[in-house]
View 1: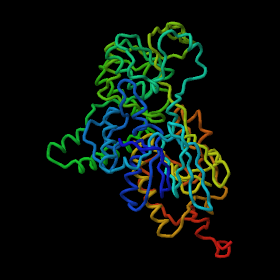
View 2: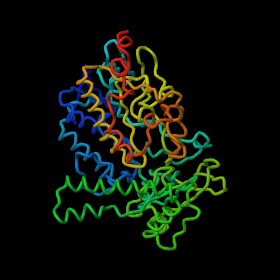
View 3: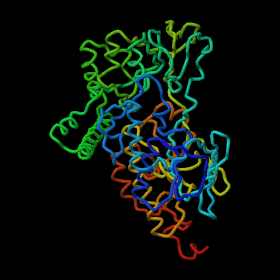
View 4: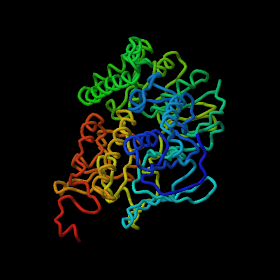
Amino acid sequence: MSEHAASGGDFDVLIVGAGISGIGSAWHLQEQCPGKTYAVIESKDTFGGTWETHKYPGVRSDSDLYTFGYRFKPWVGAPIASAQAILDYMGEVIEEGGIDQHIRYGHTITSAKWDSASNRWTLEARTKGGETVIFTANFLWMCQGYYDHQVPYIPKEWQGVSDFKGLFVHAQLWDPATDWEGKRVLVIGSGATAATVVPAFAEKAQVTMLQRSPTYFYCHPNQNELADRLRQIGIDEPTIHRVVRAQIMHDQALMDKRCVEEPDVVFEELKMAARAYAGEDFAFEPHFTPRYRPWQQRLAFCPDGDLFRAASEGKVKVVTDTIDRFTETGVLTKGGELLEADIIVACTGFHLKVLGDIPFEVDGKAVNWGDTVTYRGMMFTGVPNMVWVFGYFRASWTLRVDMLGDFVCRLINHMDEKGVRKVEVAFRDEDAGMDVLPWIEEDNFNPGYLMRDMDKLPRRGGNEVWRHNQSYWLEREAIPAIDLDGQEFVYDGVRRDAPLAEAAE
């Protein structure tokens, strides 16, 4: 990682965030718009985003790296990878692309202002030393993620947390120097983070997992048989990467469809996969029978069935109940059970952070994202020359990084071809009277972090183009086919179908 002094500057494009989205976007910009100048603004002192923030035991991906890895760089390791393996992979992308020279580490953006007179974004950033630095650009590419890296979510209704005499910590803030060997560890939660830390803790500690409600888990060996077989017969890695990605995405599309059409059958298959590791007599009631259908919340992956093996071997005790209060020695449940612990680890999710909670202005007027309507989950009414990368929940986040990389570069090149400096999205004639609704349908996907902060997000429209449908399999056809001269795109303030007199005004 190269060191950059505090320095702003004027660029064609500013990319915000040097995580998985920002690094992938920078690669696409270099490849597809080679004449454009750019900078990547990153608040941390290094790249990685989520994979740098999270330090808890066993931290790993919960998406397979054949699809979570970038389209342009083959993944050659195990499908479920450690955070360090992902950071190493990103580091190779940065080095191979010469991206490091463009990253401005240690710069926290404090404001973003668009000016239509100059068609420029002006971003103020604060350095670690307290210096204010100014960046300007024509186009803004927001890749900073969607949650608060500093302040995790801890339920306000928890009583007596300060009474606990042991160590209480949210997984997001875990210090890797913490000694937990031989300790009694209570993990609160049962989602993807809990599915990661519980088996890791169980290797050297006594573990209890306290969950309010059960989660679905998918157990599978941490290998890809197709990739391994193709390697055996001498197929090159780029071809393996492309073929395996296609196979996985085909299987995921089928699973997504079946979770809606035959959820009970899917659940029985998930049970069968878990019993391959936990034994035929493993009981799913009451601790592993969710109250929602599969994939209505994220389906947590258990490589090699590690969580179920630990539970069946007695290394993990599972309790399904709610918290009455914390005590000096642990947690008292509503059911009256005292769960004693030396360390309590909260795996309770995070706070949503829309566009980094950066104050935005357009021509002097503050932007309230809840008043905007999204165009395909990436652009917003009333906000010119900006795209936000918001990925998928039922498919790998990075699939949309690649897809939007293509779109943004195509849009920027199209603007150059038209000789225009400003683009924004606006309702078409056919959108008159369209319903305006919350960001995502609750029946489609309803994790707590979205439900808690839905009012912070842009809204969606009733017509398809005005929502993020969360379907890679629909978008992989729709987004490349977008007509950039469609009525929804307004260039330099002029609609495509505007009469000449109106345009002149």
